Length: 141
Image (cartoon, rainbow, N blue to C red; front, side, top):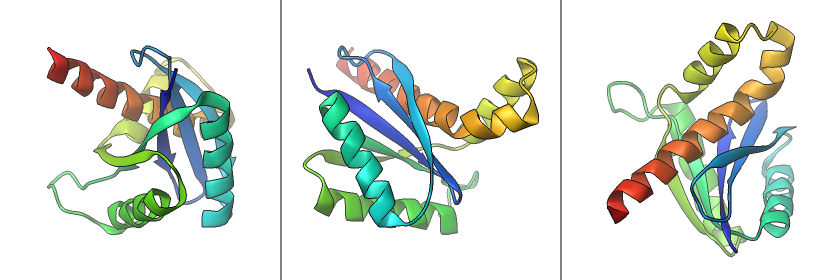
């Protein structure tokens, strides 16, 4: 059964999360250091094969005032490239505050700064996917 993959693109790392087969929950699916689009594509394709991904959600960091800054434009360009390079639907999802929310959650759980750095992107991807899954569920009624 096909799943949904979410990506939290950072300048240094990309976090990934994957849905369960029923598309209800989001689980961590890894983090990788960014080394260019070709490397990102290789990692996305690996996850697509491993989990039979049918839809990829790319975090879209829109500014709080609704404008699109450089980070949002980078996500848009990445999503457009992915649409051409993978046999899956690709969508952007407003990810305002997900990284900050993930960081606060990890701090409140008393996770060390070093460990937080390694999991915050993955947790942000989980939050992106959880938000998208919840929105889809509410659309279905």
